[in-house]
Length: 328
Image (cartoon, rainbow, N blue to C red; front, side, top):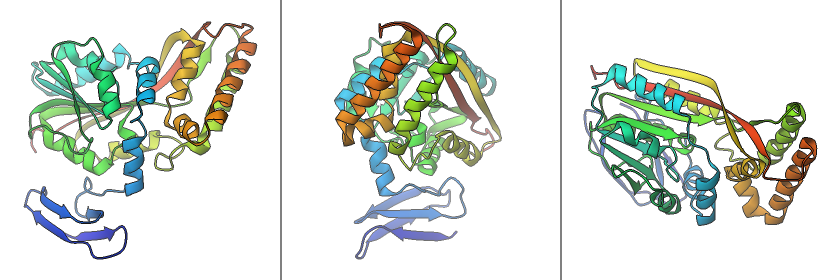
C-alpha cells in the first residue's frame, strides 16, 4: 500500500492514522487540512480541494435559494424512478427496507421513494434545504437529516438503495462512493440522476428562436459556473460511473422529459442554478437585468405579454445504476 500526502497551507501538520486490512480508515486526526490518496484503491483518490468542498457546502445554503429551489426545481419523472426500482428488484430482495437520498435538497425526489420502502431518509449538508424539505406534506416514513454526502450516519450494510438526484456532481467523488459502498447491503443499488442544463422550450412554431434565446441565457451564465464542475457536469457523472468497481452497472443518457409550466417558472428554475446564484451574489443588478432581458426576448418571440403563458420545457436526463456485488 502506498500513501501520498498533500498538505494545504504552511507549517507542520500532525496526523494520527490507524489503518485496517479491509481498507477502511478507522481514525484520522488532523490539525490542518490534509488530503490523503491511497494509490492502490480507485475509490480512494480524492481530487477536491478545500475550496471545492467549500463551494459545494455553501452553494445551496441560503434560505432564499432553498425556497426558490423548492418552488422551481422539478422532480424526476416517474418513468425514471420506475427504471431505478426495476434495476433494484432484479438484484435485491423484493422487500425494500431503507432508501437514502443524498443531497436531497428540498426533497422533491425523496418523497417519490416513500411508497416503495419501509423507511426513506433524505440527507443534505444545507440546513436551509433540510428546513424546506421538512415543510413538505410528506409520508410518515420519510425523514431528513443534515450531514455531508461523504459522512452518512447509517450502519454498514443496512441500506437497500442510495440515490442522488441532481446533486452528486458536487460531492467528493471517491469519499462519497466509498461511503455509499459502506452503507449498501450486498445486492443494494446506487442510482445517480441528473440532467443537462441546456433545457429547451417548445411553444407553437417558435421552438428554434426560443432555444436560441435560451442558449444566450446559458452562455451568459457559463463564466460564473464553478471551475470544479467544468462546462458540463455530465463528465463528472461519467467519471463516477467509471470509478464504481461493481460488475453490474448501467449508464443511460438523454432521456427527454417534457414538463409544462408558466414561462416565469422556467426563468425561476434557471435562476436556481449555481452559476446564476454566483452571478447574483457578485452583481445582483446584473443578474436581475439578465433575467429581465431574457424574459422580454422570450415573450417577444412568443408574441405574448404574459409571463404566465404556458410553455413546454424539455429536460434531458442522464443517470447511472450500479448494484453492489453479492460476492464482495
